[in-house]
Image (cartoon, rainbow, N blue to C red):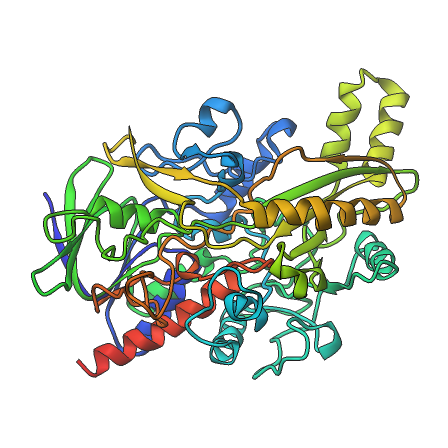
Length: 547
Protein backbone atom coordinates (compact mmCIF):
# COMPACT_ATOMS: atom_id res chain seq x y z
CA UNK A 1 0.00 0.00 0.00
CA UNK A 2 1.22 3.58 -0.61
CA UNK A 3 2.72 5.15 2.49
CA UNK A 4 3.08 8.69 3.79
CA UNK A 5 6.13 9.38 5.95
CA UNK A 6 7.24 12.44 7.89
CA UNK A 7 10.53 13.87 9.11
CA UNK A 8 12.06 17.19 10.19
CA UNK A 9 14.57 17.00 7.34
CA UNK A 10 13.91 15.05 4.15
CA UNK A 11 17.01 14.46 2.00
CA UNK A 12 16.85 13.10 -1.53
CA UNK A 13 20.20 11.48 -2.31
CA UNK A 14 22.73 9.57 -0.21
CA UNK A 15 26.00 10.84 -1.66
CA UNK A 16 28.55 12.92 0.20
CA UNK A 17 26.38 16.07 0.23
CA UNK A 18 23.31 14.33 1.60
CA UNK A 19 25.28 12.37 4.17
CA UNK A 20 27.13 15.39 5.57
CA UNK A 21 23.86 17.28 6.00
CA UNK A 22 22.12 14.26 7.51
CA UNK A 23 24.79 13.76 10.18
CA UNK A 24 24.82 17.42 11.17
CA UNK A 25 21.03 17.55 11.40
CA UNK A 26 20.93 14.38 13.50
CA UNK A 27 23.64 15.75 15.80
CA UNK A 28 21.41 18.80 16.32
CA UNK A 29 18.54 16.57 17.47
CA UNK A 30 16.48 16.70 14.26
CA UNK A 31 14.82 13.71 12.66
CA UNK A 32 16.15 12.79 9.21
CA UNK A 33 14.81 10.63 6.40
CA UNK A 34 16.87 9.95 3.26
CA UNK A 35 15.63 8.70 -0.10
CA UNK A 36 17.93 6.86 -2.50
CA UNK A 37 16.88 5.97 -6.04
CA UNK A 38 19.17 2.97 -6.31
CA UNK A 39 20.06 -0.11 -4.26
CA UNK A 40 22.29 -0.46 -1.23
CA UNK A 41 25.06 -2.97 -1.79
CA UNK A 42 28.04 -4.23 0.18
CA UNK A 43 31.64 -3.41 -0.65
CA UNK A 44 32.54 -7.03 -1.24
CA UNK A 45 29.80 -7.24 -3.90
CA UNK A 46 31.34 -4.35 -5.83
CA UNK A 47 34.83 -5.80 -5.46
CA UNK A 48 33.64 -9.17 -6.73
CA UNK A 49 31.84 -7.53 -9.65
CA UNK A 50 35.10 -5.82 -10.58
CA UNK A 51 37.15 -8.99 -10.29
CA UNK A 52 34.78 -10.80 -12.62
CA UNK A 53 35.01 -8.18 -15.38
CA UNK A 54 36.90 -9.12 -18.55
CA UNK A 55 40.08 -7.02 -19.02
CA UNK A 56 38.45 -5.06 -21.85
CA UNK A 57 35.94 -3.58 -19.37
CA UNK A 58 38.35 -2.78 -16.54
CA UNK A 59 38.55 0.88 -17.55
CA UNK A 60 34.76 1.35 -17.53
CA UNK A 61 34.38 2.53 -13.94
CA UNK A 62 30.61 2.07 -13.88
CA UNK A 63 30.78 -1.57 -15.02
CA UNK A 64 30.82 -3.01 -11.45
CA UNK A 65 27.68 -0.99 -10.68
CA UNK A 66 24.95 -2.41 -12.94
CA UNK A 67 21.95 -0.05 -12.85
CA UNK A 68 18.55 -1.16 -11.71
CA UNK A 69 15.72 -0.67 -14.24
CA UNK A 70 14.06 1.97 -12.04
CA UNK A 71 17.32 3.87 -11.39
CA UNK A 72 19.25 4.03 -14.67
CA UNK A 73 22.60 5.74 -15.03
CA UNK A 74 25.01 6.12 -17.90
CA UNK A 75 26.77 3.01 -19.20
CA UNK A 76 29.58 3.46 -21.74
CA UNK A 77 30.58 -0.10 -22.61
CA UNK A 78 28.73 -0.02 -25.93
CA UNK A 79 27.23 2.81 -28.04
CA UNK A 80 23.75 1.44 -27.32
CA UNK A 81 24.33 1.57 -23.56
CA UNK A 82 25.83 5.06 -23.83
CA UNK A 83 22.60 6.31 -25.40
CA UNK A 84 20.26 4.51 -23.02
CA UNK A 85 19.84 7.20 -20.35
CA UNK A 86 21.38 10.63 -20.89
CA UNK A 87 20.02 12.22 -24.07
CA UNK A 88 23.09 14.22 -25.10
CA UNK A 89 23.28 16.84 -27.86
CA UNK A 90 25.50 19.74 -28.87
CA UNK A 91 28.97 20.11 -30.39
CA UNK A 92 30.67 18.56 -27.35
CA UNK A 93 28.05 16.02 -26.30
CA UNK A 94 30.69 13.39 -25.50
CA UNK A 95 32.21 15.74 -22.95
CA UNK A 96 29.06 15.33 -20.84
CA UNK A 97 28.92 11.53 -20.63
CA UNK A 98 28.89 11.75 -16.84
CA UNK A 99 29.89 8.63 -14.92
CA UNK A 100 27.82 8.82 -11.74
CA UNK A 101 26.03 5.85 -10.19
CA UNK A 102 22.57 5.72 -8.61
CA UNK A 103 23.53 3.57 -5.63
CA UNK A 104 23.39 4.27 -1.91
CA UNK A 105 26.60 6.23 -1.36
CA UNK A 106 26.53 7.87 -4.76
CA UNK A 107 29.51 8.58 -6.99
CA UNK A 108 31.95 8.59 -4.06
CA UNK A 109 32.01 4.80 -4.47
CA UNK A 110 34.31 5.26 -7.46
CA UNK A 111 35.76 8.75 -7.10
CA UNK A 112 39.52 9.34 -6.89
CA UNK A 113 39.26 11.02 -3.47
CA UNK A 114 41.00 14.24 -4.64
CA UNK A 115 40.08 17.36 -2.64
CA UNK A 116 41.45 20.50 -4.30
CA UNK A 117 40.02 23.71 -2.89
CA UNK A 118 39.02 26.52 -5.23
CA UNK A 119 41.11 29.69 -4.98
CA UNK A 120 40.02 33.21 -4.03
CA UNK A 121 40.41 34.19 -7.70
CA UNK A 122 38.24 31.25 -8.84
CA UNK A 123 35.35 32.84 -6.94
CA UNK A 124 35.80 36.28 -8.55
CA UNK A 125 36.10 35.60 -12.28
CA UNK A 126 33.81 38.46 -13.29
CA UNK A 127 35.43 41.06 -11.03
CA UNK A 128 39.00 40.08 -11.89
CA UNK A 129 38.84 38.95 -15.50
CA UNK A 130 35.50 40.07 -16.89
CA UNK A 131 34.26 36.53 -17.62
CA UNK A 132 31.80 34.15 -15.98
CA UNK A 133 30.20 35.14 -12.69
CA UNK A 134 31.26 36.07 -9.17
CA UNK A 135 30.18 33.87 -6.27
CA UNK A 136 27.75 35.17 -3.65
CA UNK A 137 30.55 35.30 -1.07
CA UNK A 138 34.33 35.47 -0.82
CA UNK A 139 36.83 32.69 -0.21
CA UNK A 140 37.15 33.76 3.44
CA UNK A 141 33.50 32.80 4.00
CA UNK A 142 34.02 29.36 2.44
CA UNK A 143 37.38 28.55 4.07
CA UNK A 144 36.09 27.37 7.49
CA UNK A 145 33.67 25.05 5.72
CA UNK A 146 36.50 23.65 3.64
CA UNK A 147 38.36 22.86 6.87
CA UNK A 148 35.30 21.23 8.42
CA UNK A 149 34.73 19.15 5.31
CA UNK A 150 38.36 17.98 5.30
CA UNK A 151 37.99 16.75 8.86
CA UNK A 152 34.55 15.23 8.28
CA UNK A 153 35.86 13.23 5.32
CA UNK A 154 39.35 12.49 6.60
CA UNK A 155 41.51 14.34 4.08
CA UNK A 156 45.27 13.86 4.10
CA UNK A 157 47.55 16.61 2.79
CA UNK A 158 50.87 18.39 3.22
CA UNK A 159 51.68 20.43 6.30
CA UNK A 160 54.23 22.58 4.43
CA UNK A 161 52.46 25.79 3.27
CA UNK A 162 54.68 25.83 0.17
CA UNK A 163 53.00 22.61 -0.95
CA UNK A 164 49.44 23.59 -0.05
CA UNK A 165 46.72 24.90 -2.34
CA UNK A 166 45.55 27.63 -2.69
CA UNK A 167 48.92 29.36 -2.27
CA UNK A 168 49.37 32.23 0.17
CA UNK A 169 46.06 31.67 1.94
CA UNK A 170 45.59 31.03 5.64
CA UNK A 171 44.10 27.70 6.78
CA UNK A 172 41.89 27.66 9.85
CA UNK A 173 42.88 24.02 10.61
CA UNK A 174 45.63 21.70 9.42
CA UNK A 175 44.83 18.56 7.47
CA UNK A 176 43.89 15.64 9.76
CA UNK A 177 46.76 13.58 8.30
CA UNK A 178 49.96 14.11 6.36
CA UNK A 179 50.31 13.35 2.63
CA UNK A 180 50.72 9.98 0.95
CA UNK A 181 54.27 9.65 -0.47
CA UNK A 182 54.80 9.80 -4.20
CA UNK A 183 55.48 6.68 -6.21
CA UNK A 184 58.39 6.68 -8.68
CA UNK A 185 56.29 7.85 -11.62
CA UNK A 186 54.86 10.85 -9.75
CA UNK A 187 58.29 11.82 -8.43
CA UNK A 188 59.66 11.74 -11.96
CA UNK A 189 56.77 13.91 -13.13
CA UNK A 190 57.42 16.37 -10.29
CA UNK A 191 61.09 16.74 -11.21
CA UNK A 192 60.45 17.12 -14.93
CA UNK A 193 57.52 19.53 -14.51
CA UNK A 194 59.67 21.83 -12.36
CA UNK A 195 62.02 22.39 -15.32
CA UNK A 196 59.02 23.84 -17.21
CA UNK A 197 57.85 26.07 -14.35
CA UNK A 198 55.03 23.68 -13.43
CA UNK A 199 54.68 22.72 -9.75
CA UNK A 200 53.35 19.20 -9.16
CA UNK A 201 51.80 19.24 -5.69
CA UNK A 202 50.81 16.38 -3.36
CA UNK A 203 47.05 16.19 -3.77
CA UNK A 204 44.89 16.51 -0.66
CA UNK A 205 42.79 13.36 -0.77
CA UNK A 206 40.06 11.81 1.35
CA UNK A 207 42.17 8.77 2.11
CA UNK A 208 43.91 7.61 5.26
CA UNK A 209 47.67 8.05 5.02
CA UNK A 210 49.45 5.60 7.28
CA UNK A 211 46.93 5.80 10.15
CA UNK A 212 43.34 4.79 10.78
CA UNK A 213 40.78 7.57 10.80
CA UNK A 214 37.05 7.55 11.50
CA UNK A 215 36.95 3.77 11.61
CA UNK A 216 38.63 3.38 8.22
CA UNK A 217 42.01 1.63 7.79
CA UNK A 218 45.12 3.26 6.30
CA UNK A 219 45.66 3.13 2.55
CA UNK A 220 47.77 0.14 1.49
CA UNK A 221 48.18 1.13 -2.16
CA UNK A 222 45.74 -1.27 -3.83
CA UNK A 223 45.60 1.13 -6.81
CA UNK A 224 41.91 0.26 -7.29
CA UNK A 225 40.37 3.59 -6.18
CA UNK A 226 38.69 3.42 -9.58
CA UNK A 227 36.24 1.71 -9.36
CA UNK A 228 36.21 0.92 -5.62
CA UNK A 229 38.55 1.04 -2.64
CA UNK A 230 38.44 -2.60 -1.51
CA UNK A 231 39.30 -1.84 2.12
CA UNK A 232 37.47 1.52 2.60
CA UNK A 233 40.64 3.50 3.29
CA UNK A 234 39.18 6.15 0.98
CA UNK A 235 36.12 8.07 2.12
CA UNK A 236 32.95 7.11 0.40
CA UNK A 237 29.48 8.08 1.51
CA UNK A 238 28.59 4.41 1.94
CA UNK A 239 30.82 4.37 5.04
CA UNK A 240 28.66 7.16 6.52
CA UNK A 241 25.32 5.37 6.09
CA UNK A 242 25.73 3.06 9.13
CA UNK A 243 26.63 6.09 11.28
CA UNK A 244 23.53 7.93 10.08
CA UNK A 245 21.34 4.96 10.99
CA UNK A 246 23.06 4.57 14.37
CA UNK A 247 22.16 8.20 15.12
CA UNK A 248 18.51 7.56 14.28
CA UNK A 249 18.37 8.49 10.61
CA UNK A 250 16.18 6.46 8.29
CA UNK A 251 17.32 5.49 4.78
CA UNK A 252 14.88 4.24 2.14
CA UNK A 253 16.56 2.74 -0.92
CA UNK A 254 15.09 1.98 -4.35
CA UNK A 255 12.95 5.11 -3.90
CA UNK A 256 12.91 7.23 -7.06
CA UNK A 257 11.77 10.78 -6.34
CA UNK A 258 9.64 12.08 -9.20
CA UNK A 259 7.76 15.11 -7.86
CA UNK A 260 8.33 17.92 -5.40
CA UNK A 261 5.00 19.28 -4.16
CA UNK A 262 4.54 22.89 -3.04
CA UNK A 263 1.58 24.67 -1.44
CA UNK A 264 -0.04 28.05 -2.04
CA UNK A 265 2.44 29.69 0.33
CA UNK A 266 5.37 28.48 -1.86
CA UNK A 267 6.57 26.03 0.75
CA UNK A 268 7.51 22.48 -0.16
CA UNK A 269 5.04 20.09 1.45
CA UNK A 270 6.13 16.68 0.19
CA UNK A 271 8.37 14.66 -2.08
CA UNK A 272 6.71 11.83 -3.99
CA UNK A 273 8.64 8.72 -5.02
CA UNK A 274 8.13 5.42 -6.80
CA UNK A 275 9.25 2.07 -5.46
CA UNK A 276 10.37 -0.75 -7.83
CA UNK A 277 6.74 -1.87 -8.17
CA UNK A 278 5.84 1.57 -9.55
CA UNK A 279 3.81 2.28 -6.40
CA UNK A 280 3.82 5.93 -5.37
CA UNK A 281 4.65 7.07 -1.83
CA UNK A 282 5.17 10.50 -0.29
CA UNK A 283 7.32 12.03 2.42
CA UNK A 284 6.36 15.22 4.23
CA UNK A 285 8.67 17.35 6.35
CA UNK A 286 9.77 20.76 7.51
CA UNK A 287 12.92 21.15 5.43
CA UNK A 288 13.65 19.44 2.11
CA UNK A 289 17.10 18.90 0.63
CA UNK A 290 17.66 17.76 -2.94
CA UNK A 291 21.17 16.32 -3.03
CA UNK A 292 20.76 14.05 -6.03
CA UNK A 293 23.75 15.48 -8.01
CA UNK A 294 24.00 18.17 -10.67
CA UNK A 295 21.93 16.24 -13.22
CA UNK A 296 19.28 14.49 -11.15
CA UNK A 297 18.47 17.56 -9.01
CA UNK A 298 17.51 19.90 -11.88
CA UNK A 299 15.76 17.00 -13.61
CA UNK A 300 13.55 16.44 -10.54
CA UNK A 301 12.76 20.16 -10.26
CA UNK A 302 11.68 20.28 -13.91
CA UNK A 303 9.63 17.08 -13.54
CA UNK A 304 7.73 18.85 -10.74
CA UNK A 305 6.17 21.52 -12.97
CA UNK A 306 2.49 22.20 -12.18
CA UNK A 307 0.00 25.07 -12.14
CA UNK A 308 1.79 26.74 -9.22
CA UNK A 309 5.24 26.21 -10.76
CA UNK A 310 4.76 26.23 -14.55
CA UNK A 311 8.49 26.20 -15.31
CA UNK A 312 9.25 23.68 -12.58
CA UNK A 313 9.91 24.01 -8.86
CA UNK A 314 12.44 26.72 -7.85
CA UNK A 315 12.53 27.98 -11.44
CA UNK A 316 10.98 31.45 -11.54
CA UNK A 317 14.36 32.64 -12.88
CA UNK A 318 14.36 30.06 -15.71
CA UNK A 319 17.86 29.06 -14.56
CA UNK A 320 17.12 25.50 -13.42
CA UNK A 321 19.04 23.21 -15.74
CA UNK A 322 21.07 26.04 -17.26
CA UNK A 323 24.83 26.66 -16.83
CA UNK A 324 25.67 22.95 -16.83
CA UNK A 325 29.40 22.61 -16.24
CA UNK A 326 32.15 20.03 -16.11
CA UNK A 327 35.90 20.46 -16.61
CA UNK A 328 36.43 19.54 -20.28
CA UNK A 329 39.28 17.07 -20.38
CA UNK A 330 41.95 16.15 -22.91
CA UNK A 331 44.21 13.16 -22.43
CA UNK A 332 47.60 12.30 -23.87
CA UNK A 333 48.66 8.65 -23.96
CA UNK A 334 52.42 8.58 -24.23
CA UNK A 335 55.04 5.93 -24.81
CA UNK A 336 58.60 6.42 -23.55
CA UNK A 337 61.96 4.87 -24.17
CA UNK A 338 62.64 4.49 -20.44
CA UNK A 339 60.43 3.10 -17.63
CA UNK A 340 58.26 5.52 -15.64
CA UNK A 341 56.46 2.99 -13.42
CA UNK A 342 53.09 4.41 -12.48
CA UNK A 343 50.81 2.35 -10.24
CA UNK A 344 52.50 2.73 -6.85
CA UNK A 345 49.90 4.10 -4.42
CA UNK A 346 46.47 5.61 -5.21
CA UNK A 347 45.33 6.12 -8.80
CA UNK A 348 45.80 9.88 -8.37
CA UNK A 349 48.07 11.51 -5.79
CA UNK A 350 49.29 14.75 -7.32
CA UNK A 351 48.34 17.55 -9.70
CA UNK A 352 49.90 20.62 -11.30
CA UNK A 353 47.72 23.50 -10.15
CA UNK A 354 49.71 26.69 -10.81
CA UNK A 355 48.70 26.41 -14.48
CA UNK A 356 45.12 27.23 -13.44
CA UNK A 357 45.84 30.79 -12.32
CA UNK A 358 46.87 34.00 -14.11
CA UNK A 359 45.77 37.11 -15.98
CA UNK A 360 45.45 35.04 -19.17
CA UNK A 361 42.05 33.99 -17.83
CA UNK A 362 40.63 37.15 -19.40
CA UNK A 363 41.10 35.38 -22.74
CA UNK A 364 41.14 31.64 -22.12
CA UNK A 365 40.66 29.02 -19.44
CA UNK A 366 43.08 27.96 -16.76
CA UNK A 367 43.69 24.24 -16.37
CA UNK A 368 44.97 21.52 -14.07
CA UNK A 369 47.53 18.99 -15.35
CA UNK A 370 48.10 15.56 -13.86
CA UNK A 371 49.51 12.16 -14.61
CA UNK A 372 47.16 9.28 -13.90
CA UNK A 373 48.93 6.96 -11.46
CA UNK A 374 47.05 3.82 -12.49
CA UNK A 375 49.05 0.62 -12.96
CA UNK A 376 49.50 0.10 -16.70
CA UNK A 377 49.57 -3.72 -16.77
CA UNK A 378 46.00 -4.19 -18.03
CA UNK A 379 46.43 -1.52 -20.71
CA UNK A 380 49.82 -2.92 -21.68
CA UNK A 381 48.49 -6.46 -21.84
CA UNK A 382 45.61 -5.54 -24.13
CA UNK A 383 47.85 -3.44 -26.39
CA UNK A 384 50.41 -6.24 -26.66
CA UNK A 385 47.71 -8.77 -27.58
CA UNK A 386 46.45 -6.48 -30.33
CA UNK A 387 49.90 -6.73 -31.94
CA UNK A 388 49.42 -10.46 -32.43
CA UNK A 389 52.36 -11.41 -30.22
CA UNK A 390 52.65 -14.64 -28.27
CA UNK A 391 55.10 -16.50 -26.04
CA UNK A 392 58.23 -14.70 -24.88
CA UNK A 393 57.68 -11.78 -27.24
CA UNK A 394 54.22 -11.19 -25.76
CA UNK A 395 55.61 -11.32 -22.22
CA UNK A 396 58.37 -8.84 -23.02
CA UNK A 397 55.98 -6.42 -24.72
CA UNK A 398 53.53 -6.51 -21.79
CA UNK A 399 56.39 -5.69 -19.42
CA UNK A 400 57.65 -2.87 -21.64
CA UNK A 401 54.27 -1.25 -22.15
CA UNK A 402 53.42 -1.57 -18.44
CA UNK A 403 56.58 0.30 -17.49
CA UNK A 404 57.08 2.73 -20.37
CA UNK A 405 53.59 4.15 -20.98
CA UNK A 406 51.59 6.78 -19.12
CA UNK A 407 48.51 8.96 -19.42
CA UNK A 408 48.68 12.73 -18.94
CA UNK A 409 45.43 14.61 -18.35
CA UNK A 410 44.48 18.27 -18.58
CA UNK A 411 41.16 19.49 -17.12
CA UNK A 412 40.02 22.94 -18.21
CA UNK A 413 38.16 25.53 -16.17
CA UNK A 414 34.59 25.94 -17.50
CA UNK A 415 32.44 29.04 -17.65
CA UNK A 416 28.75 29.02 -16.63
CA UNK A 417 27.04 29.30 -20.02
CA UNK A 418 23.22 29.49 -19.96
CA UNK A 419 22.86 27.64 -23.29
CA UNK A 420 24.51 24.56 -21.75
CA UNK A 421 21.19 23.32 -20.59
CA UNK A 422 19.40 20.30 -19.13
CA UNK A 423 15.79 19.93 -20.22
CA UNK A 424 13.37 17.03 -20.16
CA UNK A 425 13.69 14.63 -23.07
CA UNK A 426 10.61 13.21 -24.75
CA UNK A 427 12.29 9.83 -24.23
CA UNK A 428 11.12 8.04 -21.08
CA UNK A 429 12.83 5.68 -18.65
CA UNK A 430 11.53 2.39 -17.21
CA UNK A 431 9.26 4.22 -14.76
CA UNK A 432 7.84 6.43 -17.49
CA UNK A 433 9.79 9.51 -16.30
CA UNK A 434 11.37 11.87 -18.81
CA UNK A 435 15.07 11.24 -19.24
CA UNK A 436 17.47 14.20 -18.94
CA UNK A 437 18.35 15.89 -22.22
CA UNK A 438 21.55 17.94 -22.12
CA UNK A 439 22.98 20.32 -24.70
CA UNK A 440 26.71 20.86 -24.17
CA UNK A 441 29.27 23.11 -25.83
CA UNK A 442 32.59 23.65 -24.03
CA UNK A 443 32.69 27.20 -25.41
CA UNK A 444 35.35 29.33 -27.07
CA UNK A 445 36.96 30.13 -23.69
CA UNK A 446 37.98 26.47 -23.36
CA UNK A 447 38.72 25.96 -27.06
CA UNK A 448 41.13 28.94 -27.07
CA UNK A 449 42.84 27.52 -24.00
CA UNK A 450 43.38 24.14 -25.68
CA UNK A 451 44.69 25.73 -28.87
CA UNK A 452 46.93 28.42 -27.38
CA UNK A 453 47.90 27.09 -23.98
CA UNK A 454 47.16 23.60 -22.72
CA UNK A 455 47.85 21.38 -25.74
CA UNK A 456 51.23 23.03 -26.48
CA UNK A 457 52.12 22.73 -22.80
CA UNK A 458 50.92 19.12 -22.71
CA UNK A 459 53.25 18.31 -25.61
CA UNK A 460 56.17 20.05 -23.89
CA UNK A 461 55.56 18.07 -20.70
CA UNK A 462 55.32 14.76 -22.58
CA UNK A 463 58.50 15.50 -24.52
CA UNK A 464 60.35 16.43 -21.32
CA UNK A 465 59.30 13.07 -19.85
CA UNK A 466 61.01 11.37 -22.79
CA UNK A 467 57.95 10.55 -24.88
CA UNK A 468 58.66 8.84 -28.20
CA UNK A 469 54.98 8.75 -29.15
CA UNK A 470 52.14 11.08 -28.09
CA UNK A 471 48.46 10.45 -28.85
CA UNK A 472 46.16 13.28 -27.75
CA UNK A 473 42.41 12.68 -27.62
CA UNK A 474 40.74 14.20 -30.69
CA UNK A 475 37.82 15.64 -28.71
CA UNK A 476 37.04 16.92 -25.23
CA UNK A 477 36.03 14.28 -22.69
CA UNK A 478 34.14 14.40 -19.38
CA UNK A 479 35.76 14.70 -15.94
CA UNK A 480 32.62 13.61 -14.01
CA UNK A 481 32.54 16.88 -12.05
CA UNK A 482 28.88 17.87 -12.52
CA UNK A 483 28.20 21.51 -11.67
CA UNK A 484 25.92 24.45 -12.30
CA UNK A 485 22.35 23.24 -12.90
CA UNK A 486 20.87 25.18 -9.92
CA UNK A 487 23.37 28.03 -9.91
CA UNK A 488 23.95 30.20 -6.82
CA UNK A 489 23.64 33.97 -6.73
CA UNK A 490 22.36 36.94 -4.77
CA UNK A 491 19.89 38.02 -7.47
CA UNK A 492 16.77 35.78 -7.65
CA UNK A 493 16.21 36.84 -11.25
CA UNK A 494 19.35 35.13 -12.56
CA UNK A 495 20.05 32.37 -10.04
CA UNK A 496 18.28 29.48 -8.33
CA UNK A 497 19.71 29.43 -4.79
CA UNK A 498 21.13 31.93 -2.32
CA UNK A 499 24.45 31.86 -0.49
CA UNK A 500 23.21 29.05 1.79
CA UNK A 501 21.96 26.98 -1.18
CA UNK A 502 18.36 27.78 -0.18
CA UNK A 503 16.01 28.10 -3.16
CA UNK A 504 15.01 31.73 -3.77
CA UNK A 505 11.45 30.58 -4.50
CA UNK A 506 10.88 28.24 -1.55
CA UNK A 507 12.40 28.99 1.83
CA UNK A 508 12.27 25.39 3.08
CA UNK A 509 13.98 23.88 0.02
CA UNK A 510 17.77 23.52 -0.15
CA UNK A 511 19.73 22.51 -3.27
CA UNK A 512 23.35 22.17 -2.10
CA UNK A 513 26.32 20.61 -3.85
CA UNK A 514 27.80 20.79 -7.31
CA UNK A 515 24.61 22.06 -8.98
CA UNK A 516 24.82 25.23 -6.87
CA UNK A 517 28.42 26.03 -7.82
CA UNK A 518 28.72 29.39 -9.59
CA UNK A 519 31.99 28.61 -11.37
CA UNK A 520 33.94 25.38 -11.60
CA UNK A 521 37.64 26.15 -11.32
CA UNK A 522 40.11 23.55 -12.55
CA UNK A 523 40.34 21.18 -9.59
CA UNK A 524 38.04 18.34 -8.58
CA UNK A 525 34.72 19.69 -7.28
CA UNK A 526 33.90 17.33 -4.39
CA UNK A 527 35.46 19.24 -1.48
CA UNK A 528 33.66 22.43 -2.60
CA UNK A 529 30.40 20.47 -2.79
CA UNK A 530 31.07 19.19 0.73
CA UNK A 531 31.83 22.70 2.03
CA UNK A 532 28.57 23.99 0.54
CA UNK A 533 26.74 21.07 2.18
CA UNK A 534 28.04 22.03 5.62
CA UNK A 535 27.19 25.68 5.05
CA UNK A 536 23.67 24.64 4.08
CA UNK A 537 23.46 22.35 7.11
CA UNK A 538 24.20 25.27 9.42
CA UNK A 539 21.41 27.24 7.77
CA UNK A 540 18.98 24.31 8.02
CA UNK A 541 19.65 23.73 11.71
CA UNK A 542 19.41 27.46 12.44
CA UNK A 543 16.17 27.80 10.50
CA UNK A 544 14.47 24.92 12.33
CA UNK A 545 15.74 26.01 15.72
CA UNK A 546 14.16 29.44 15.21
CA UNK A 547 10.96 28.20 13.62
